Image (cartoon, rainbow, N blue to C red; front, side):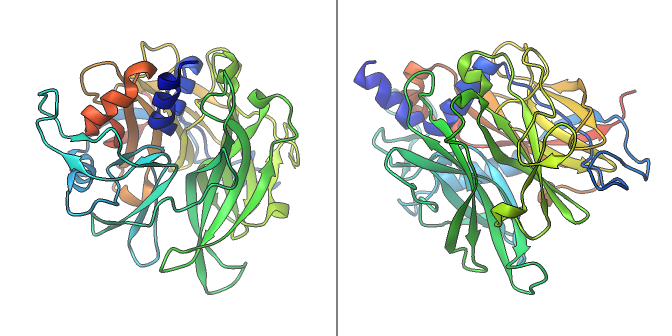
Length: 415
C-alpha cells in the first residue's frame, strides 16, 4: 500500500475508521427498548407496563451547541487545545461542569478564512498534531479548556485507547467520595481489512474529582484470545443506569469482513462497580453470564453500527445509529424495546440531519441526556469526508468537517 495513502489513513484517525466501517456495514441508527428491571431481575420485564413504541416525531438543528464547538475550535488564543475530533461523548460532573470526551483529535491552531486554496472556510496546517483521545471541559454552556492530551496514553506500541461512555460513581459501593469511570476501547494496528485497528479490549479508567486526573486503568474484557477479530466485542458505546444496575452496550466489528450489519450486545454491572472486572455479566441469550451473545442484529439489514447510543425515554429505551440501505451515511432511524435484551422493534422514525456540501457523511450518533429536558433529547453526530484518499487534505482545508453537530429530537409513539 503506498506510503502516502497509509499516512492519509493515519491522519484521518478514528473518524474515517468508524466512518468506513459504517459504510461497509451500511450501519443503522436504532432506538431500543428500556433496560428492564423485571421481577426476576434478568432485565427482560417491565412490570410497570410503561413501555411502548417510540420513534423520532420531529427534530431541529441545534445551532447554539454546534456553534459553540466551532467557536472554541477556531479560537487562536492557544495552540495546544482541541480544534476538532470525533467519537463525541459527554458527562455532567457533580459541580455542574460537562466533560466532553473525544477519540482521534486535532490540536494546534486554526487559520483563516480564506484557506490556501481560496475557499471561504477556516483551515488547519497539514502538520497539525493528531492525538488518539482528548477531553474538553464546558461550564455554563461554554467550552473553556482542553485537558492535557492525550488524556489516556497508549497502552503499548501500535496500540491506542478511544474513550467512549462515562459515569460518575462512588469510589467504592456506598462511599461518599465520587470518581469518574470512563470506558475505553483498545485497538491494535493491523493489516487489511483492519487498517483502522483490530478490536483488542474494553477497559475502565478511573478519574479523580474535581481535577480529572487519571488514577488507574483496568481491563474488564480482553478479546485477544478470540481468534476471529470480527467476533470481538467492545463495550461502552453507551450506558444506561436503571435501578441498581448499569447496562453497558457494545458492538462487534462484523463489517470489517463485509458483513452488512454489526450486532449489539449488552452487559450488566451493579451500580458503582464499573471498575471491577469480576462484577461484569453479559447477556448470553438466556441469562447473565460470562459469554456475550447478540441482542440485536441479523447480519443483513437489522442491527447497529460499531458506535450507537441508548437512552431511556419514559418507559422505553431508545438506541441511535445510522440507517442501513441509505445512500452514503445520511439517515438516522430507530428501534425500540422494553428491555436491553430485546426483543427489538423497528427500524422506524428516519430523518436526515444537516450535512455540509460535498462527499461527506454523518456517523456516531450520541444522545446527551444531561443537555436534554422538557421532552427534548439532544443528539450529536460526527461529520467526516467520505473518500479516504482525499480525507486528510479535506480535513485540513475545512475544519468544520471534523467536529460534532447537534440536533434536538422529540420522540413519540408512531401515529
